[in-house]
Amino acid sequence: MARGTKSASEVGQQGLFDHSQAKDFVDLHEQVETSVNLLDSLESFLSTFQKDLSSVSGQISELQERSKDIDNRLKSRRRIEKPLSSLLSDLAIPPSLAITILDTEVGEPWIAAITDFERRLDLLKVRSRVKAARDLGDIAEGLRIVAATKLRTFFLALLQPMRTSITTNMQVMQTSIFVKYRALYAFLQRQAPNVAGEVQKTYTGTARTYYETGFRRYVRSLGWIRARTPEKPESIISGHGDNGGPYLDQDRLAYAKIDGPSVILAYMADDKTHEEPVEAILRSLFLVLMDNATAEYAFIAAFFRSESFSPPLAMETNSALFSPTATLLSPDIGFDDRRSNAGSEIARPGLMDKIERAPLDAIWKQILDPVLEYCKTFVTAILEPMPPAVPLLTMIRLTEAVITEVQKRDCPPLENFLFAMRLQLWPAFQKIMSEHCDTLRKLAEGGTTSYFNRAASTTDTSVANICNRYVVMFNSFVILTDQEEETMIFSK
Image 1 (cartoon, one colour):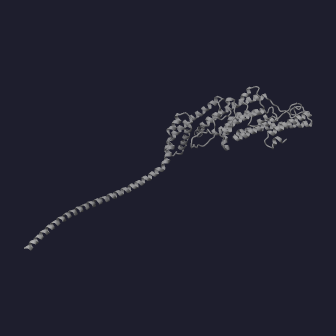
Image 2: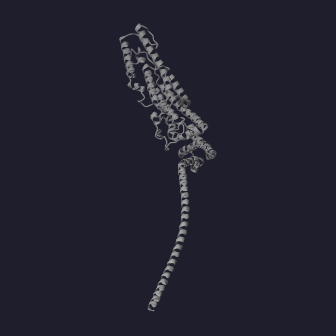
Image 3: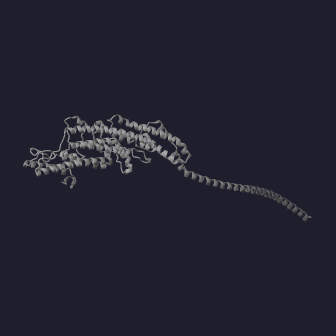
């Protein structure tokens, strides 16, 4: 009984324990199911996440490809950015440039504007394949015509004062105005040659009249002074009975050099008592001719010389080469009042071949032909009657000194003219020296007449006088001769 009771009690306890265990199992089961559900949910989430990652990975790859493409396109654009920007800059005509040409008068701002405009014109021609360049062609052509028209009016107006008055200082006009605007004339030479030719012809005619009038008046004044001091050659045996005799005149020999006494001024001819020796008169004429002619040639070579277009790195004028303070000979105070260093005030023509020089020489000759004719006529007049031997040799040495200076200043046409004058003086000198020799020979042989139609007799006084004249002449020749061996002088 007791055993049965115990067994039932144990059974009951066992049941309670089992019941308690079952509840734990049920809770565990529910937890397992919850975990399984969570795992299923997590599995689903991970599966979806994996799909999203695959999609994102694909998008990233696509973005990477697009990024590479954009980067390549950016590099390509950067490579063409500068050329394209340069092209657009070259083809475009800035409004400020167009306004300058269309709405302003020609002045200093035009120098930079025209240089820039010509550069754009040339670039439009080079870029003619580009449609934009062809579209701008008509606009650029219109601006070119307007610019050429205004420049023509401008240059012709500059010449007007010289055409109406001989008192205008032409050299100042050349150095301070024309040279400053040389770039504008160069534009006409390249872009409007017909207009440039018209300006050149007008200048040539104006300068020709200017110099012709000035030199005609100056040569006339020198002729009046020369007429007051006629000087005829005397035989070396003449004046043998005089107490006085010839002497070495250093002052007159000084006229053989460029550096020396001042030139004769035209107004001096108004003083009827003013006199000058013939060599001083010729020296004044040649120095005035040299300064004006070489300065004009330098200007012609600098202004009218044809050059290809090359835009400067920085715009600047030629004021350093052409000084507006040049003291060239000016007709406003007699056309002969000042001498200048013409070879230094204006830039020399520089190295040019014959082809380049030919048109410049032609312009110079057209301008100065009347002047050279006046000078040639004056030299011929000086030789009639023929002056004495020493003044003749002085004039020859003067001519040679002027030729040397002209060679330094690089003016071939004037050099050729002076060579011709030298050749005209030498035969006269040789002739008078031959007459002196013949006179002495006839005197030694007992002759009574000579070329100079002077009777001669041999006495101690006459011999002393002849020796004195010979010594003076010989010493003068020595002073006037730089070379130790001068066959032209001492051959006889």
